[in-house]
Image 1 (cartoon, rainbow, N blue to C red):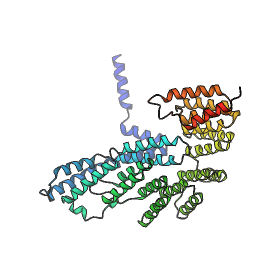
Image 2 (image 1 turned 45 degrees about the horizontal axis):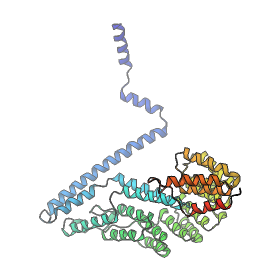
Image 3 (image 1 turned 180 degrees about the vertical axis):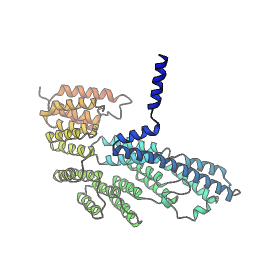
Image 4 (image 1 turned 90 degrees about the horizontal axis):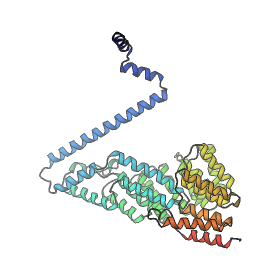
Length: 444
């Protein structure tokens, strides 16, 4: 047995492959796409590592040079210490994460569902959390620190450079940091705080970019000031910046807020003439603009043009059109869109289910389908909110099922008293109106 074991060990040692040989075999069985993806991931990792190392070295050299040039001019050592802490506290990934959250939240501004109110609040909190403690007051303190450092003479060379070059100052303040705070106030419809942040941005010498003006365009429109919203877009053009698809989309949303459908399509044609091609959020905004004025024919025309000519609509596009079907009582068409979403592996949301339930609630022959969708909604992990309950109560009222409506209302009232459910479930005027309809339409 010992000889046999030794012989087997020798055979295994002879046939054992080296790491290079294993790598060659692995490469030979990989598809070209897999090899390209592997090389890209390796390159991204290496590029990011090199970038972080170069940034660290550049900061060290800058600090050493400043310490050598003016060691006796440091009258406020706490200023330098606190400023360096502010510069280092925001890594690159935080800015990337915040931008991603901002883009996703901005796309959801086109929703016409009452559920959007809570979603926008969650998006605002997510954006503010991703930028840390960078509120308007905190930014103001950072600007004061930068001005104090400038007065102390610590950055004489940097003062000779063009202010706001590349959107960043030598004081650790970036355009992205200001933009995220402006965007959070855009979601909260706080135009005063957004403009205050914009003024601080100018005081700090940070050059605003296309994202800055786009967010300011939207916040003015949401505040009911269309003239100021359009002026922000004009200021973007006068500053020498090229409008992006995000800039044009923001102007379209501004006109959408005021039911200016023709102006929205005028901007749409203008951006195409300048070879800035619309994306899905732009088409979604155009559809909502049509729906807000009741132009369902034009809305369907935009959706069909998007679906058959431009690109596959996303879950937002389908949800908006399901909501349009609900308004017109076209349940069959809404269900067809829902089945197409499932077949296309699009992400379903509670807004999608709410719109479907709303469509079924308007037809008494689809009364049972409301509760089937409600069960499916909960099975998908979504929790019904006050909009869902109001719609189901409305369905019971139309079907003249008073007992079931009262049972659902009691359940809603009981859950709304919980501290963790008070924002999700709340008794509002629509709830009371639907219950009054249930009593009025009931036939014993």
